[in-house]
Image 1 (tube, one colour):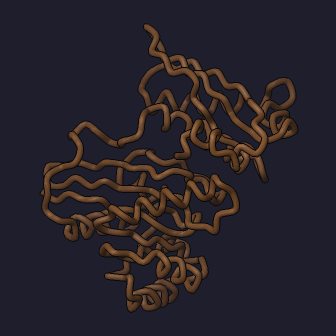
Image 2: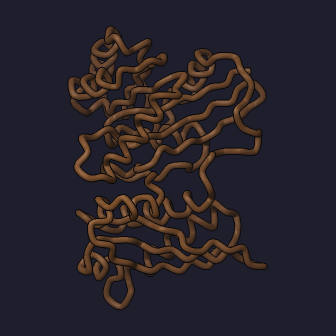
Length: 289
């Protein structure tokens, strides 16, 4: 049996979360056109009769400006340490020189391949240029061209990953699909709706804390707090007459019910915590360890 850790790295918006979801065949990581959507290392466990792959989606690599960013980059560092295979992901439309600098700075110890994503929006000439640019880099074992969103060449990439992994025993039971608790995925689904519905600063100044998750006889009761930094942001999230927070709750509840395969009663509240992104105590409370 093949078994190992395959960790995905890249700059923000390269498509790492979309690729993780494509590998798993279900939504494990939230996605958004906005940068810095992923804040945690998200492990997803794919198990078949012939392999077990522990995929890790990691935050986009950035220069930290807040303690929150530092925690995000710590998640990247931890993923570097246990990777059997690193997927270095780059959007074909982004600056390849900048991506090259990021990949070289990782100082990988594991095998690595460059995954050039979003090729469905490019011509063959550009695809070949991207392949030629990365193929001779010291960190690069080989180059794969894919479209994670369209599923183009994703299965071929997965097949190649299996070939490169070592023989070994599974790390997790066959029923596990992640090492993260259900509450984590619920909070992420709520946070995704904030990215969907609000523009500018709100998504980056907000996080979600699950305060209650109780199984009732006919449904699951969930109470969650949306944390923001200022009173003005709280007013925006609530909206006139509660319009916006109701919309967040409605969209999130539908997705949570599909994820849990059970009816959900979802209560949302908004709390102001000034400068929470710089506060170690708040960051630990909100799961950014």
